Image 1 (tube, rainbow, N blue to C red):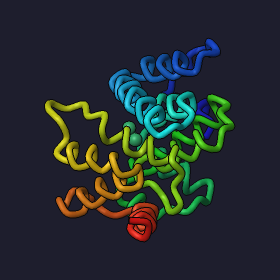
Image 2: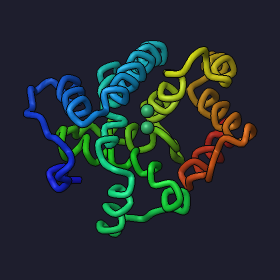
Image 3: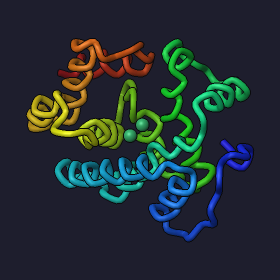
Length: 203
Ligand SMILES: [Fe+2]
Ligand SMILES: [Fe+2]
């Protein structure tokens, strides 16, 4: 995705520091709150990386870029994937915001020149997860949910934290079950369904 194609997006000059560059991009496009969220997710991601013996730098990088496509309007997200003849599932068609994970991955690659497959994959499935998710995918998925930006703690917090004592897989599965059983899932994404079935088979 070429951000230069969207005249409403301000593109600040690069400094060479990805976190700093992401912050400036978000800030100058009125998305400071989203960047604050990305930083909160990075804190949780790095602590999970430490706990599960993963590369902390990769987890930090994926977190500070995971919602970077918030600078693009949702209507442009849908138009972009259609113009590129990319597949769109029913959930994405009904709720184009769900495309933001795929577009954030595109922006991380094309705009921030990230080539690390673990980082790009984690960004691409951070809302839905996917079949065969890697530990990096699962860390970002779960950190994004645990970095709660509302008052108090999320209703699934205790259950997901307890599940982390078992495994990352169990924590992801516990969150997914909570979302489905509490009726909070608006429309299941194909990747969500595939991930949940895959995780269930590993419980
Ligand atoms: Fe997101
Ligand atoms: Fe997020």
